[in-house]
Image (cartoon, rainbow, N blue to C red; front, side, top):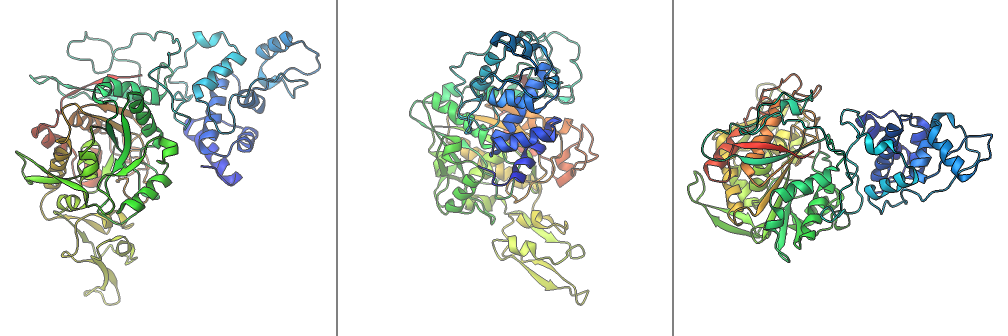
Length: 583
């Protein structure tokens, strides 16, 4: 996506610099803004310049930017130098002292305007043009504040399976903060706000714990997060479940129009690329929604997905809305041993797939308290009638005193269940009123209200809603053989509300990382524990909620752990897990 105005491009650069703690002079910002017009190119250019500045131990300035982006190497003034002397001078003199160049040596540009080549190739070209012996002997520390993931910016698919890894110095042995039961006792690792707080489920008992792979944001080996995700999926058994020529569903949440917290299409592309390498036929999928918005039918749903970056040109796979044009394409699946339903209706496209990879964003939810893999599968892949059955016990209520009669909830309700009425106790005052006979319990009005005047009024109990969702999860997974589904949970931009809303509130805890597993219960249980072990982010709705406190319960009044517990009872997985880090 090209940015049309200079102001938009400048905002992208300055925002990325602020997020990564990079000090960028105005002249360098101007240089990047003139060179590039897409967010990916602007961000990648900034990160590449920052990495080179860190490597050389110098400040970021325009000559350095020209060297990194254009391959133009400045030389000292007042000298006529040969080619070898130019190289020596440029390597020995600090860039900040070189001044305006008298002459330049042209090198092959690191990037063309469209960024057709992958960042790894570009960085290798930079090293060849600018040899630095210290680079191989000085691994970048994760604590240096320089960005480590260099493939997260939208370049072409990388063949992680066939690429030979670049030699990396062997890191010093460091014990995991939560070793497996058989591991020898080891001292705690160096202080790290995430790793020091990593939880570990109770792994005593007869049932072996599931393995959940943990990818922290920091990488000791300078490996892209996309590469690590591919590695994690392979460890989860993806090569064993993808059959050549067979359709593989990639369950994603395309994000509602206006929402910005959903998982980036870049990660979906990494999954798609790996499935293709294994011979499968991947397709992106999700089912239509119960509430009003851009995803209630397949036409608008596709428009929304493409607008949010999930088009074929970006991800490399077609989109198939799982329950069809108007949510009537579904299959009845029988259940056994469940509390609420003897059968559930599951979206056809996913039921007919051969295998599935589920990409879930960990976040809060007004009714469920928490949403991740279990909810993404159960609620996300049930057709609209199934969603209504799951929500049947949810009936929002209006606090008349708090209502400002703004009418937003009326606009958002897709079932004409809300209108404005005069307050019988206060003449001249109006408030919203919810018709319980029309209300289907989707809960959209709860999120729509900016004054917290609408809250869930359970006609049953929250646990019943969670159990109904889990039973639909069981119905989806019944269509796959054991081990035919892999899961990725993203603990980034952990917003307090669902990605279905047209806004994204401040993350409730700092970004933690990404989890991968082939056990849906274990990965959700680990996600809950990781969020609970973090400290609530300042200024967010979890501000002041300390480590060890249930963040989602504090915000929504509903604890998320019941979903995992009930899913374990239904045999969908285990709450017991061990974390294995992929750095």
